[in-house]
Image (cartoon, rainbow, N blue to C red; front, top):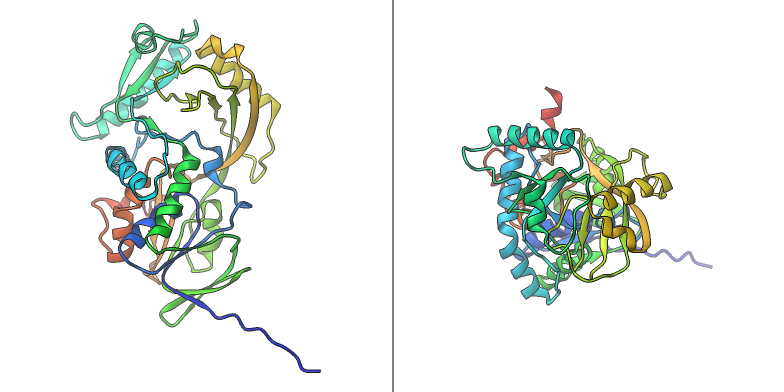
Length: 378
């Protein structure tokens, strides 16, 4: 009896993207739009998908203290979102519910207000003169912005920026995938990567679903980025951070602004959250944390106490040592790139444009060296 051997042919691409979340999908879309043959490898539904625990904030305020480049990068991203989302919806027909009314970050005591004001002042001093559009509002001014919902007695004030907005993160992910495929991109779910090796001028990636090879490799696999980057000699320090979210029953629209930890969706539900927990890869919900989230939400808007919580869940964010993005090109293999960050929604407009240019042509934006890992060695 003869032995039958099945040999799977290696799939060849110009660019391989490892990671099919919002970060990897935005980069893959930008590269596919340029006409390159791109393949995106994704674990699929079993992945620790950050989009599942994401409130969809397209957020500018409060970011970049200690790294002016990140503040500028975020501002450019938020300014680019209206054009980006119009194009995405035109390409796919998918409504992602993007709105940009400005955003509020509530302070529930004088101490919180002072701490927030100090942070905003520090970022403003580091920014270009007159180029940090975020201001502090007292309680009266905040209530005037929210005539259809009453503030709780604990609200002391809030910070506000006109650049902030929000989007449905799961609809965004679906639209990115659809647009990527529309430009001829190949998407492979259920392809968890277990080995990466260099062969001549190509990188060979082994998955449980087959073998792939390409001359350019982009690792944007969320909390798996550190492990995968080690296979090509790169050190990318990332760790998971658990965040828990509650969702209420639907009610009439009454909150016109996205807010930190509280926002009303286009469907009328309230999303409440999110926590910051160091629990490794544990995504079990914690009743104590759920209670803290619920209590704070009721302190901001007492009327929320009348709504039923219909679901709660936890997800994992991607956190770097300083909580700012890592964009790294390998020193020994310059055609290998690693991306790690937690602001994938906000920065999607630039990941699909300027980041794609950097990967394909080497055209790094000004000051981009500040995002490299060597900043951690100082």
